[in-house]
Amino acid sequence: MSKPDCTRFIDKFYSFIDDELSAAECAEIQGHLDSCPECFERLKLESRFISFFKEKCRCEAAPTHLAGSIKAALEKSS
Ligand SMILES: [Zn+2]
Image (cartoon, rainbow, N blue to C red):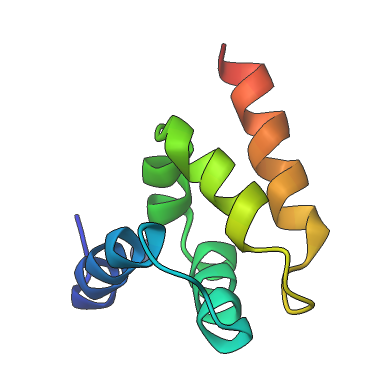
């Protein structure tokens, strides 16, 4: 049940993966994931999402709790 926002977000996210993230883009991704469990669940299943975040979302806008909660969710579900 994707909202239009989510479709746009996912599209954008995948184009982000092959590119560098600015602090603003990083914050946008984080912000959407923080407020949207659907996208969070979807991206949780993407193993490259994890490495993506580790490599590219080291900007100061990235709250570490997101990476932490993804890691925790992955450990719980595996
Ligand atoms: Zn969403």
